[in-house]
Structures are given as structure tokens and as C-alpha cells.
Image 1 (cartoon, rainbow, N blue to C red):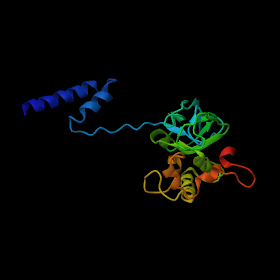
Image 2 (image 1 turned 180 degrees about the horizontal axis):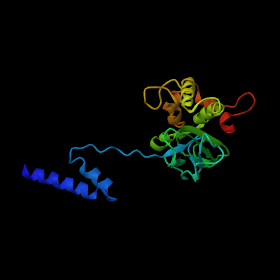
Image 3 (image 1 turned 135 degrees about the vertical axis):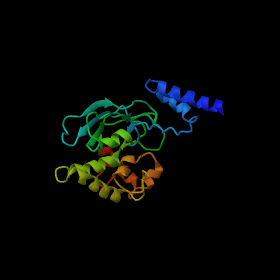
Image 4 (image 1 turned 45 degrees about the horizontal axis):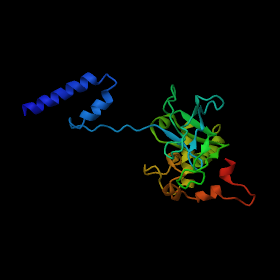
Length: 233
């Protein structure tokens, strides 16, 4: 019993000594189970730009709604590779912005490594000549996995026309209204259909596509005028 108490005491001392060092995270993660404490998982902040598939090497810019001409962060390049999970990923710090600040992220250029969204990297990636947008609060860009996709582009096109007509608080309400029009089943798992589902939607996930209130393949279908919505983006 005394040896057990001594061991626990030593571990506590080590945790205290190393808590201010660069090794604290790894050390505490190792000793936490021994101390009977649950170590909180660290959530990576990487987001991803996806057209048909991930936009490898796309250029990322972040703008405040109050100034859509000068980026508050970027341009910066998203990850450039042929890995469907890693290509097109990027992080944002948004230094100096308060959590409830609305931030629109723009992803342009790059190469679509899975243009037909079949979950297999294409042998020859498709050059992306267009731009996608996604709107979310700074706190969401800092703490969640968000996707910049054709669905968030639809959301942005809708919201962009309302910016001067509604307050910042009302934007979330309008986003939720749009989400309920486009989505029939909760995507992000929070129990509600709202703008968070637009940002969580993954075009390459068949289960996500089935949760939409419309056939997602319609975006890549040629209409009577010979136009394709995805191609226009």
C-alpha cells in the first residue's frame, strides 16, 4: 500500500515538473491512465477543400464579412498530394478575430484528384479553374473539421445576397432555413439540421449524399442548355 502511494506521489511530482516543458503533453498522456484520469483527445483542426474530390494544392484565403476584398489570412496553399484524406487540407489561425466573427473561406485553383467522386484517386487529376466558398464563425474554423464544397458554395451564394440586409445573428437563422431545404437527415450528428450540416457534408461520402433532400448527382448532370453546375463552379 505504501509503495503504491509512493508511486502515485512520484508520478504527480513528475507531472508537475514537466508540465511547463515541451514534453508535458506526451508525458501527461502516458501517466494519465495510471493516475485514473481520462486524457481529453486532441482534435486536429484541418479542414478540406473538395470539388468532386479533394482540391490538391488549392489556394486558400479567409475574409471577414466586413471586408471581402482584403484577406484576413492567406493566400496559403492547401496540402498537395494524391491522398484522398490529406489532399486539399488546410488550417487557419484567424489571429485577432473574436469567436463569433463570421469568416468566409475561399478555395480556388488546385487539382481535383477525384473528379467523379468515386472514392478512388484519379490517374490524371483535373485542373480546377473555379472557386468554392464556405461561411462559418471563427470559432468553428478553429475547432471543427469543416469542408469547403459545392454545397457550401450554394450556401454562400444564398447568404452573400443577404449580408447587407440582415444582422450577423440572423445569418445563422437563414443558414438553418437553407439547410433544412437542402438536407433531410442530420449529417454532423448534433441532432438538428442546420448550417453545421452544410459544413460537415462530404461529397465523397455516399452516406452523406443520401442525407440530402435532392439528388447530388444532379450537380454533375448536363441540363437542357448543355450546362453542368459543377463544371460552372
